[in-house]
Amino acid sequence: MMKFKISNNVIRRLPRYMRHLNMMLAEGVNKASSGEIAKRMGVTASQVRQDLNCFGGFGQQGYGYNTSELRDRLAEILAMNENHTAIIIGAGNLGHALIENFHFDDCGVALTAAFDIAPGLVGTTLSGVPILRAETLESFLAETKIDIAVLSLPGKLASLTAGRLASCGVRGIWNFTNEELGEIPGVIIENVHFSDSLLALNYYLSEPREET
Amino acid sequence: MMKFKISNNVIRRLPRYMRHLNMMLAEGVNKASSGEIAKRMGVTASQVRQDLNCFGGFGQQGYGYNTSELRDRLAEILAMNENHTAIIIGAGNLGHALIENFHFDDCGVALTAAFDIAPGLVGTTLSGVPILRAETLESFLAETKIDIAVLSLPGKLASLTAGRLASCGVRGIWNFTNEELGEIPGVIIENVHFSDSLLALNYYLSEPREET
DNA sequence: TAGATTGTTAATCGATTAACAATC
DNA sequence: TAGATTGTTAATCGATTAACAATC
Image (spheres, rainbow over the protein chains, first blue to last red):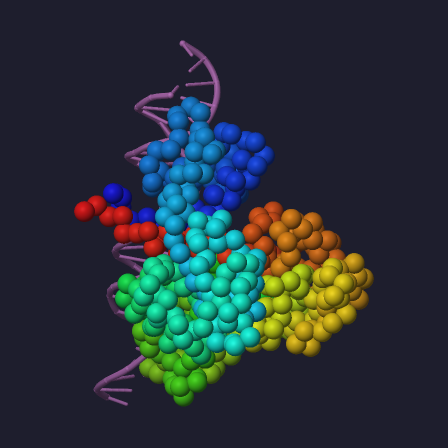
């Protein structure tokens, strides 16, 4: 279907386009020219057009892009209509926060269940999401097709758990631990390393170190 | 002090070098050649040397780098020794999770306080961090030099709060909301957009779309 | 010394920006 | 039609990789 490989840089920009298109829709802006999008995002119009044209000509020469159509196209590209399913491994503070505050459905992902070992948690329900016994993970995955597992458990368990998940057919791991998960064949790993982000901020705060 | 501008790409790789050097130290590996680091990280030795040489010659020809010395140098570059201070704005689920589970001190940052509006929370202490009344934010900042504010509050309050913080001298904002904060002069904004990350994972899961 | 690995320059590769013909 | 803006090619810029002399 696709003519060439899309670079990671482009992919990482797509959700941001989404965000701005949604903002424009909320403002009632029905036309989105590359120039207008670029101005709002602080990038060049050229880049916007190049990025979008990786996926086909969504625009109309002389007019621009239709805001809601472009938004829908991006949603499709980002697989938001593919009904991916997810489970959370580890319903501690962070897992808890993700269940209650993060809108998986806004990304087109259905959060199906969470797993934990704490007896006080297992059997309860958070925002409609059942918390199941960690020991039942394999049997659950045998019955239910799950695309994404969210790792929000202690780092020491991350690698082991990733392996268990992969062998049960989970294809994507959203890793919130600070662990480096090695490559797992057939599994896409997306890391959210808080500390990497904070350290980058830390670095930029210590600038400017330019000569005086 | 610094000869030229370091590219963002390089900066974003530094925390990962850190992580691997710490792993090597934990394994008792005292010598870290660019080749060894590269192999562990799945990058080229050339890139490792180029990255490190942005900051000076830390290595010894014919030997390599001393693991712990290199780690210490990176820590310094990432401003981990500058005693940056941070506060958390919003002690809900996510703020809570950050206070209890994220080790600010591992990044060389001191988490000083959290702010919230919930009467049940204000006045309590979480993992030694006092939760203060949001209304006292300005007076607190007038008395205490704070470098970083963590935004873990409802998105609708993000922009407004960012402005308040900036006008009180906060120089860095670690934004966990899904909001697009515009540029604020003199303030570094580091975004942790969960949904951008999940959507990228979603995209890669829907691949391969190559022609058949 | 010989071997190894850095620091650094040169070559390649890829990503961004600019330009403009196509066309709505 | 005239004006505007895309889609796309070409030019530029920057980042990565390769090569190798310096040197421990």
